[in-house]
Image (cartoon, rainbow, N blue to C red; front, side, top):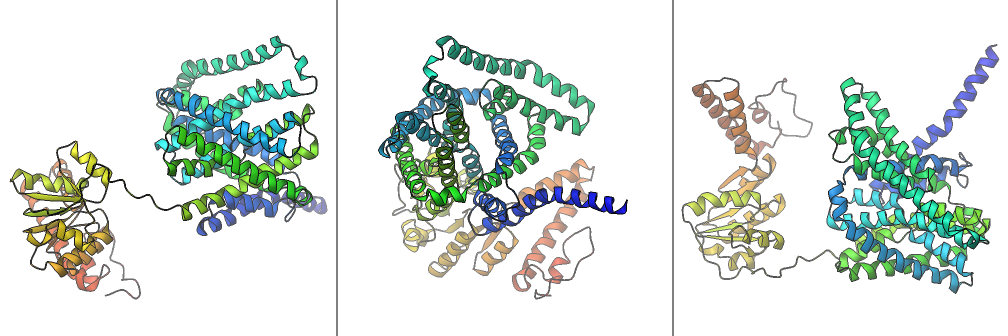
Length: 597
């Protein structure tokens, strides 16, 4: 009996091993690759290769993992949909059906030529090239999120193209059936019935989202059961994906539509918080599965063909994306970045190739070679993005319509005209003081003109610019830049070259304030100090403190802060006497070893 129990426990432990290995591989690889600057996607791919059939062999069937992990892409699209209100999506219709359609059309034409040049028949060349045109939504979305460009215009244009590619999988799958041997025998009625079924499913999903989802979540919200809300969120995502898959459409498109329909719901933020943990884990699992599916035996046997295909497909797709981007008036920088991000094949290619294999357009070996080509391109994408970021020269600011500081003459010279400088300028202008304003951000200069400010272009860290801006003749100089290092450098430069001109400086924090004073600033103010004290005083008032009591407390706080800063100039932030002036709610701890006492 004991032996049977031990054997049962051992069997359960073995069943848990793959899960432990998957999680352990991700935990080790992703932080390591991010630390090396290689990104999380490449970390997942590498980890998958190591633990897959051609590495340690912990997993022998990566396709089964990929099948489950595709739900990560589905949930990712749902979260993206939550950020896309219908009005915003409608505003993107030109980019989706204009820019997206143009890019897909040109890239299909270019990539079909690769197969033809290698001597393959037209149907096989077309399917192979078209599959590669369908970009990896998972990789590109992850890259956009990591680069924090998902919500900016250039990021939204990429999202629009990806949406068009998701929509394109429907007619492409229908075309596979038509191109198949005997596929032409499929009647027009059958094809129209398939299209009608897809449109009916989309319409049903839209109606359900408009009239059923928000009331359902309102009822569940009243039950105040968080786990039920999480279950409902998963039900909506997976239900929408299943409905689309049932009629032959993309699961990701169904989830995206569900997200869009809930984007204006009062429960949007809670839904996003509920889905986020599942999305992150499953998306990571997807990349792990892609890494495992990299069949090294197929690559070894067909490495020349795969190398030629990867290079040809990626180069031609890069050219097609770049050409369309420039045609639609994108800048050279944006066009190159878009082409680098989208030059790989994607997960929808596996669906297209599987469909083509099932109807006899391509054989099993060709399917394996094409799948390896897609996976290699996906693995190369993070490397290409890193190379792009390191090799692409930084964008020089456009100074079109901006005047450079030259021969300026005013009582006050203000360097930096962001949110802080704009407020500082008001009492000076109200007192009719003459001010010369210089700023190094051309966009900010152009925007300031709309609000009645004449601002000149100039870098205050350069001595020639300070001379041109009239620093020598100014009665005082205000350093209001939003860069601690630049503010310190300007202060040092001004006090070295124009020692008689007082310098008033904006400090970012206490340490910066002390550094500015040590550099010779005549006055500094931490950017949050006065506003925080005003808020604190208002809080005392709402706590029914008397006016005289409030004034006494605020005077004490100001005195303590001034004395503390004076002590920190010599003793540092951890000076014991300085820290004793803080009104804290814990006993004072000793200074860290090596710090001033």
